[in-house]
Image 1 (cartoon, rainbow, N blue to C red):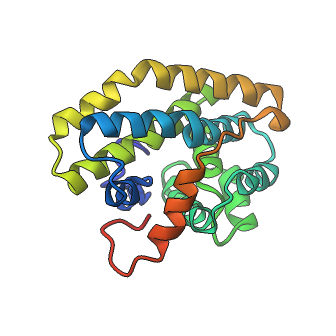
Image 2: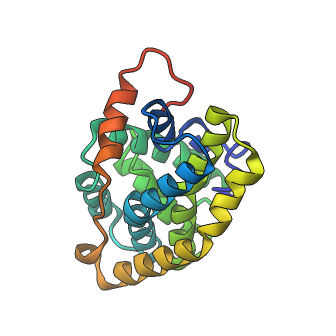
Image 3: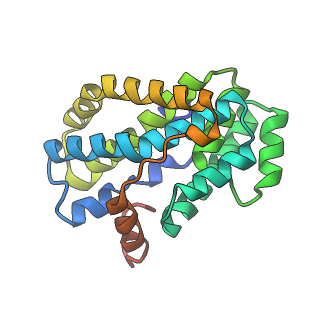
Amino acid sequence: MLVLCDGRFPAGGHAHSGGVEAAVKAGRVRDADDLAAFCRGRLHTTGLTAAGLAAAAALGHDPVVLDAAADARTPSPALRATSRKLGRQLMRAARAAWPAPGLDALAAAFPRGAHQPVVLGSAARAAGLGPEDAAHCAAYEAVGGAATAAVRLLSLDPFRATAVLARLASEMDQVAAAAAAAARRGVDDLPAASAPLLDIWAEQHAAWPVRLFAS
């Protein structure tokens, strides 16, 4: 529900492109094939990292420690701000849907918002889900939002965008499994895969005077 119903469930992800808007402007994403390459790269870098953080939060690792780990894995100030904004919005919705002391404590510790993957994993835990579930949500979200944004940015056939996601299903499963396994080994073993071009594009995008998406 948190991921698939985001347009109606007020977690805010529908307003973000996952870097696709900047990639389209740069001429790197022009069609469904380009979108597939973009999503695959995003899945195995920032998606894997987010999935690990979410899985660790779902396991019950200290969310304050996880938030610091997320900060260290997000070198772009613009992306850090976006992650915390999305985390704050998701927290508000999650506390309404699944009231839990853990969510209350996390919200109190980070009144301006914890990082979104940490909140996602904490929400999954409050909802009775496990680390694999949280990791799958984070992995899907890493590419699902980008595919949806590409439909609007490129007037792409929605069926072709959905096909991109369907073809990535087995890789999403692999990423989620790897992320959950790493989370079980401890915070120090969490993935720290990076996508430097996404970081650069995020800083450029944040300075645009006119844009369709918030990030």
